[in-house]
Image (spheres, helix red, strand yellow):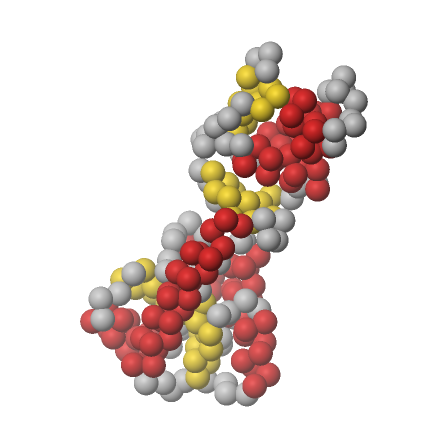
Length: 225
């Protein structure tokens, strides 16, 4: 299991890293949010443990950045502050749990295990509401699209078109089928609106590594998985 620890207090970080490694975890340690920011968007972690009081960007701000990028990795906040308002602020920023310093190491391990169990259950229960194609992720509940963790801003019609193509992945769909599904059956079939919106999508989705939307000459389009 991969753990990211962001902690500037050397005594605490040494204690936590030593204990986690002894319990079989792989740990990436960062002493600041700025350092963590350089790796968190390119590296996959199972749990992130963030100290609230960090020099420069604090743990709350870092959590907001992580969530803004569409990264849903469980976040456990560490803080010497035990006020209810501090806990509420951390949880409202996107954290999943809050542990007050000083803490017993057994409780830290228990919190980590609880977060990973919860994530597994959530993935099992919500997998149908999340479409993934290569680096693209379509969150059907939030009506949001992400590519490599970066949110892509789409209009409602662009999103509806992308979802229709994704739900028919590796299947050729004609322009008429797209018109009926996205714009309604009474839409003028002589229009080139489908081609226009396909162009909009291609301009917003980076296809440098993978061509997501293929043109099938004389037929229509296909979303390639």
